Image (tube, rainbow, N blue to C red; front, side, top):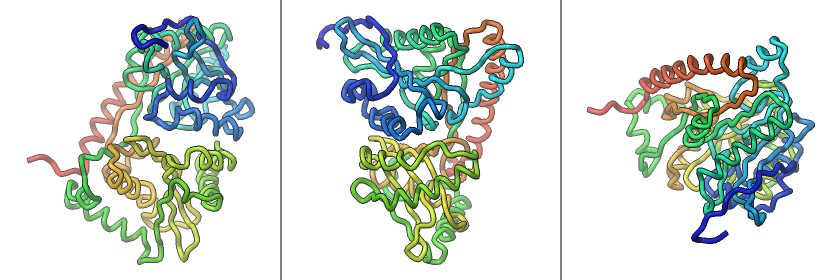
Length: 389
C-alpha cells in the first residue's frame, strides 16, 4: 500500500477460520491496543474449540481487500445460533420475533466471543482511509446477512466512534454500563486510598486485612514465563466452579487457557491466592499497553473479601505499578463503586432486516437508553471519592 495514496475497498470477503488470514495482515488492522481482537486471542478461541460451530459460534470474519488483494480492514464476526456469551442481552427480542412468526437465529455478530470488553469491531489498516473502509466492512456484513437471509447483524461492545458511525448508517444504537477504575496519576495504592472519602478508605483497608485471613493467605501475581500449566490447572478449576454456579456451562475449555499461555503469556496477568501453599482462588486479567482488563475469577474456599482483593485491589495495584491508565472490571457489578470503579457507557449497534420488528426494537431502545443514562447518573453520585471543595 502506497504512502501517499489510499487504496479503495474492492471487495469484502468472508473467511471461516481466523487461520485463513495471515496474522500480520489481521494484526496490522486490529492494532496493538486491545489484546482481544488480536489474531492470537481469536486463534486460541477457535483452535481450542471454544468458539466453533458446535458451540454456536461459527466464524464468519469479514476481510476488506483492495483490487490488488492487499488487506485494508477486518472484522471479527460469527454466525450465532443462540444469544449466550455476548453480555448484550437480546433474548427478549428473539422471543418476541419468534412469537410473531419470525426466525431470529442464526444472526451475525461482530464481536469477540465471551468477552464484554469495548474494542474495535471494524478494524482498519493504518494506511487505509478509516471512514470509507469502516463503512465498506459494515456494508459487507449487512450484505452477508442479506445473502444468508438472516434476521439481523449486531456489533456489540464496539467503540463509541464506531457506534456513532453505524448510527449514521441507519443502525439502531444501544447503550449499557460497566465499571472502570481510572488512574489519576497515582504513585501508590496508598495514594489512591488517599483520594477516597474517609469511610470508604477505612472499609477498603479492612477488606484487605480480612482477605489475608490474619496472614494465612498469600497473593502472587504471575505473567510471562512465570506462568505454568500447573497454574492453569488450578485456575481452570476455579473458572469451572464459578461458571457452573453462574450460567450452567462454562464457555471456555481447558485447551484455551494453555493456548493463551503459550501465545500471549506476556499479556496475561494471573492473580493467585494461596492458603498454606495451596491455591484457593484466582483472577485472570489481560493487559494492553494502557489498560488492564479483568476477565475471570473463581475460588475453591470462601474467605471474606478475598474476591475484592484478588479481582479489584490487586488489579488497581498492578495498574499503578505499571503505569496503566485504566482497569476495566468486566460485566455487571454496582458493588464495584465503593472500591473505586465508576460507571461508564458501553455501546452496540444493530441492523434488523424486518421493518416492523426493527420499529419495535427502536422504540424499546429509545426508552432503554434513557434508563441507562439515569442509572449511570445515579450511580456516579455514589462515588467513593472525596468531594471537591
